[in-house]
Length: 94
View 1 (cartoon, rainbow, N blue to C red):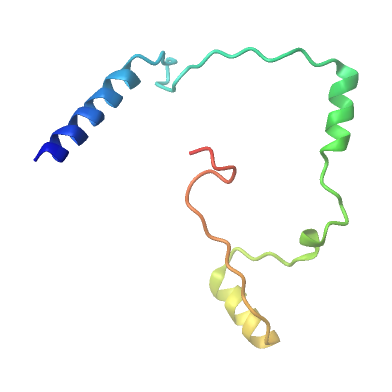
View 2: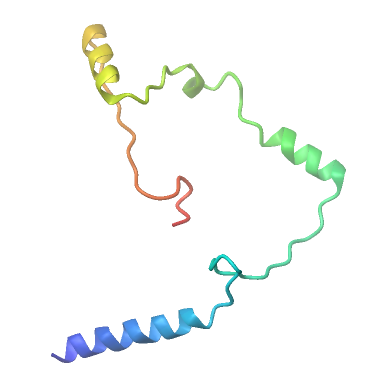
């Protein structure tokens, strides 16, 4: 019983503190941050540096979005089927 009370208090505390977060008109949480200014030259350098390699091996993979068609194709070619499945944001920002 004590564990349930502790969990309930933690939940209520988290809910109360979440209500103190400023919200935009669409209800999204608004957190104000400041980032250092980046010059146009530095931005261009970063953009070029961060571009993925056009010859990267993963670009040569024939990706499929239809699971049944991919399974059929893999079976016909006698190759394994790699399934990438996830829930949430691809960068882990959930």
